[in-house]
Amino acid sequence: MKTTVYTHKDAFEHKVPQQHAEQPERLHAVLDGLHDKALTFKSAPLAAREDLLRVHTSSYLDRLLAMEVGSDEIVALDADTFLSKGSITAALRGAGSACLAVDDVLTQKTEAAFCAMRPPGHHARPDAAMGFCIFSNIAIAARRALDEHGLQRIAVIDFDVHHGNGTQEALWDIPGCLFVSLHQQDHYPGTGHANETGGIGEVLNLPMAAGTSARQWMQIFKEQALVRVAAHRPELILVSAGFDAHHHDPLGGFNLQADDFGYLGSLLGNMARKHANSQLVSVLEGGYQLPALCLSSSNFVDGLLQS
Image (cartoon, rainbow, N blue to C red; front, side, top):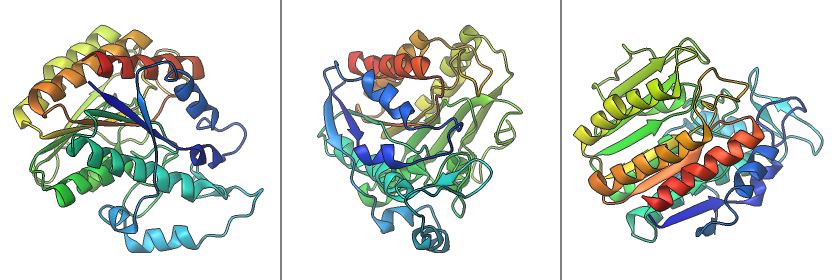
């Protein structure tokens, strides 16, 4: 699949405390793994307020945008989500990258997209930052595809080791929007139980125990997640691509290897070719062991390219 990468240097200006897991070096690791591939690179724009309001409340946006943060200051939004002087611009470009990627894929400017931005987004709730996340990038992209492009059926797949609670909340009862999450059970943030099926039955949570083998994980992905996506017949596939299910990652307890993420990319790319008019947008979520993140994300994009 022809694949475009959306990124911007402003993403490095989101600063966090020194020992925090979500450091700017994460993005360096991802981009280092992509530099020698047959990819098109595009600059991530700032998200429009109207796109943010598809998911987030106006009061939340107003609170964030009114915050004044000094050049050397880092402000806590919750126990593990922080704001520095450059954070809002970085987050706006993260959401903007997902929106532009949707536009480009749906107007045949590219087939697949990978948004290499930070901070991540899948924990951000409609009215609150959470879990390193400020804006719910993938949910915003989903709502733009539905509202602006008139799509009827979208599938959102989240394979981060942590449950995408913010995405689930934002898409809980949105007709035509299937949300599928594979994640470690009883892990942060404590959501994503199998009985959470959405307001209209379009949520599929697939929690797995810590220590689940890569083989077991992939079997569940193919036999449950992809089967449900195929039955949904999506016109667009959106992916929250978190690489913290890697067995070296310090924030998870799964056992995927870097090669498994390449296989995931090829499976998702082939699914998009078969069921979604070759239209797929992926956004970077987690992944906190830098060599593993570099190789896993690189392999994932290779899988898209080769599908």
